[in-house]
Length: 114
Length: 118
Image 1 (cartoon, chains in turn orange, red):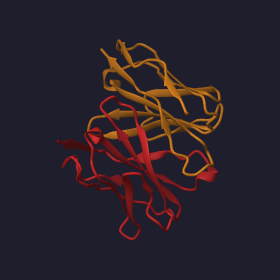
Image 2 (tube, helix red, strand yellow):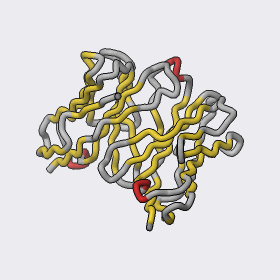
Image 3 (cartoon, rainbow over the protein chains, first blue to last red):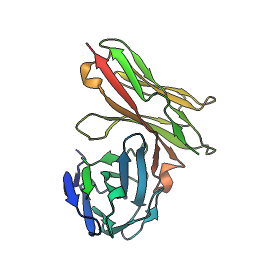
């Protein structure tokens, strides 16, 4: 059974803090993704990674950075948290080449920035 | 431009009835994949069904089927014999390009909230 875990279910931070969201998968997936989900907007891709130390910007990368030092771990970093980054953050992973290569999601981190 | 359009923000269906959730997509790629995910109130995203652009038959998984009309660029999800546990948000998503090249993310629609009533 594929398991994607995220470091926290709920997180409260203050404006200007540096925030780290961690994601770990145990299925040796090549691809990992970070999305944010807001009501009425669906899921929007922040960053993804298709290999260790590789990263690609998604649709809304501003204000975020990522790190992938090991294949199983993908971190999302908010360099200086702002209130408009209050959201649900979802991590996902998938194989690169085995169709349908559906993405498996973690439980999400609900981040509140005060 | 929106790549995935789900025009129904909310839907109601009675238990045991069938329901169709609409999804249209926009791509110029010949190779693409279409996915449906379910998100219950607990928040986890659950993969339901997949349709490849070259698949000639509509995908089916238990009570879920995907009505794929390539010329119309639609990929509607049909849930037969609805159950109370089907109440959730449903997202349609598309991957453009070939999976063998790796690294392709999904474009998600805004979702449809389905409520199944007794």
